[in-house]
Image 1 (cartoon, rainbow, N blue to C red):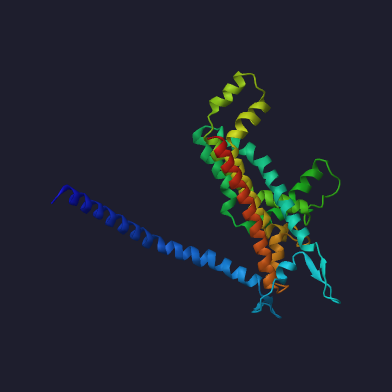
Image 2 (tube, rainbow, N blue to C red):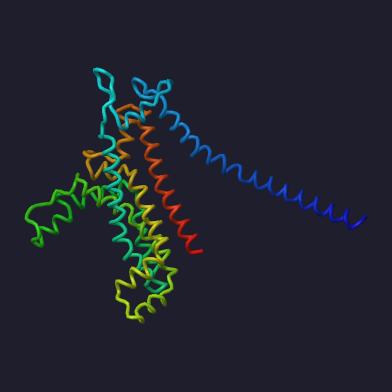
Length: 312
């Protein structure tokens, strides 16, 4: 057999092995792909389909194509001449939800960054204990934790009792069933989502750079904003996304602490599938919310890619 034939046979064998390996990998991935299709893409497809149908009289849908659910988000039909009139009710709910989610994200960042820095600067053998304490609330159901917060901020709760005992206030503050209560509840619910990614970034921080900043007579604020924060930026961005997105679609916190008086997006969507029996509009609102989240993630991905390119 010539050398050329040997090389050809060897190449064919390598090619056969690669095809077999690809086929085996595909079969191994098949169960995971089927599960992803079943629990993710299929419900999303149903939601998209329902958003373009007509609501049924007693709930459900009528199989007639309609874009009214998307029109209804911004306009309302006049009952006399069927003209469209701008209606800001649903838009205000979305804007209010975005404002509360942004506020909760900023509040969680203000509380979470010092907490993460505190843990990262502790001796290594103590860090796991502090991380355990941060994640401890997650051992309890969110519903239970929200009820506990309700007991703390109500008129007869711990906060008002302490403030009245020390003489700061003369009568109880009305925190419960207000935007302030929802704001506090969102921060409490999602604070660990901010602390953990920032800690992951700060843990890898080379603190000799911080010492170098002090050696060059930089103030504490300059070291913080010119050394520590830039190096912890990936964790800060990840924490902000992890708090903002679930905060935007929160349901339990505004329902219990807000008293259902002022709706957030999650409550509005749940209402469409419940009392209002308008499944197409509920589906359309959910898709609009999802589109908003996708835009946020795309902006972050583009900004991260641009920064990576600029850094070479």
